[in-house]
Amino acid sequence: MIGYVIRRAGWMCLVLLTITVITFVLSRVIPANPAVFVAGYGASQAQVDRISHQLGLDQPLPVQYEHYMVGLASLDFGRSIRTGRPVTTDLKAYLPASLELIGISFLLYLVIALPIGIMAATRRGQMPDLAVRAISMVASAAPIFWLAMILQLVFFSYLGWLPLGGRIDIREAPPPTFTGFFTIDSILSGNVPLFLSTLKHLILPVVTIVLSQLAVGARLIRSSMLQELGKPYVRTARSKGLSERTVVSRHVVRNALNPVVTMAGVQLGYLFAWIILVETIFQWPGIGLYAFESFGALDYSPIMALTLVGSFAFVVINLVTDLIYPMLDPRISYQ
Image (cartoon, rainbow, N blue to C red; front, side):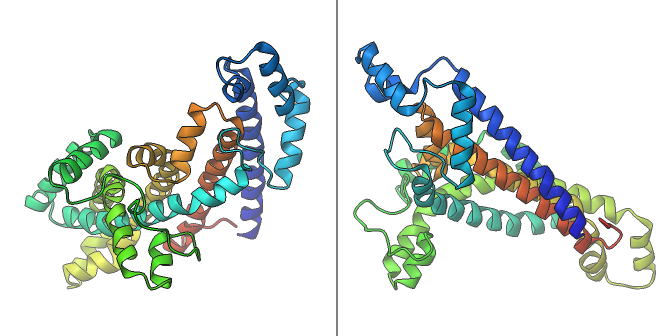
């Protein structure tokens, strides 16, 4: 197992190095010039050239890449030309909001998808199964941005039950920072009204993410369960007089989890990309909104940093997913 982890870690380093090369080259070959954004579109060519020199954009590409990698070795991602702050500082400010949103959404998704998929499989052809299949078909056809705007239209514009966006109301001050997660920090500071406001602002973006992923998850869990229910060991267990609940809970569910774990790992990784749309629509101050604004400003340093951070998260999630397999199925070994 240790040897497998070491090999995977080596491949992870190679993948991340390749990503730094690709993102660096792409950021330099596109025709747009970030120095124009900094100087202003009415600036003279001399002003643009001076800013390009200050940013190091007039140096040869190998020299620029060398400077970038030297800084990266000390976790220095450069400075954002839009915020004027080091990118590391921006990431520390924006990352907790995204992790809070992703974490709550993913946990809620698992809590809902697993029982729904199991129920649909154990009641195949009955009303619960038909309802899950119909809802999954409709939900999978709805783009996540469309779903987000529909929820805003219904629950904010028409009903007025939930806020349009943000983490808290604009009239409220953020809680003292302990973890960066407003739900936890508001509890630790004893501010119950702020905690309730935080939950209220979380509802729409969380529901958007959960609904967009629920269709795929429930269908895969159902398919995996049905495949296991048709195997000989299930018939043997039933012939021994075991109850259906015991057969499903002790045998079928565990054996059906391997493809579910794969799916969950992939979906969690992709959440770091989909979060850009969700945070932009709901104006959630996380790395998704930060990425969107950086793209619009041609702010290379944050774009490259976010690409690298997202890639790192994705490969780590894949590694953790692979390490979970032997825990679920002893037949799988990485020796």
